[in-house]
Length: 198
Image 1 (cartoon, rainbow, N blue to C red):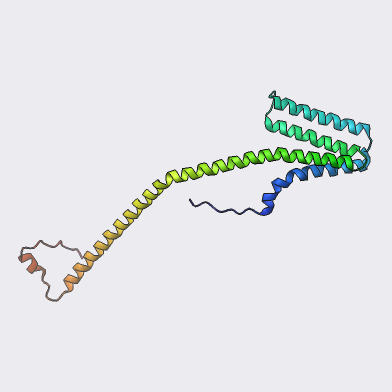
Image 2: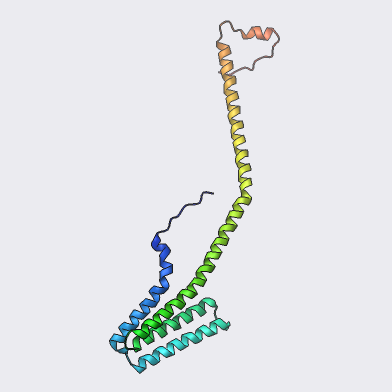
C-alpha cells in the first residue's frame, strides 16, 4: 500500500541494453591491439585462438545436451567461443573489413539472444506485478473492515470520554448552584449520590 516510488536514472536503464555492443566492441578493439602487436598472420596465435574457441564451443555443446551444467553455462560457453573467434579473426586478419563484418554479425547475434532473455524477464516482472495487484485487491476488503473497526473503537472511546467529561461538568455545575442542598434531595427520596473522597 505504501510502496516507495523509485525513479531510475536513464543510464541505469540504458546500461543493460548497451552491454552486448560494449562487450563485442571491447573484444574487437583488443583483437586489433593484438594485431598491431604482432598477431597478424601469426599461425601460432591463430591456432591458439582456434583451439580455445573450439574448446569453449564443445563445452557449450556438452552443457546444452545436458551432460553437465545448464542453460546458463551453455550460454556462457557459446558466448566465450564467439568472443574468442572474434578476437582471433581481429588479431590475425590484415585490414578492417573482415573484423568489422564479424563484429557486426556477433553484435547482432548477441542482441538476438539477449532480447530473448529481456522478454522473459519482462514477462516475469509483469506477471509478478499482476499477481501482487490481485493479492492487494483480495486483501483490500480486510484492510477496509479493520480500518472501520478501529475507527468505531476510537469513536466509542471518544464518546465515552465526552460523556464522562459532560457528567463531571454537570456535577460540578450543580454543586456550585446557589441554594443547592444535597440533603434535600436525599429527604425527597431520590437516589443517594455516591460519596466523593477529596
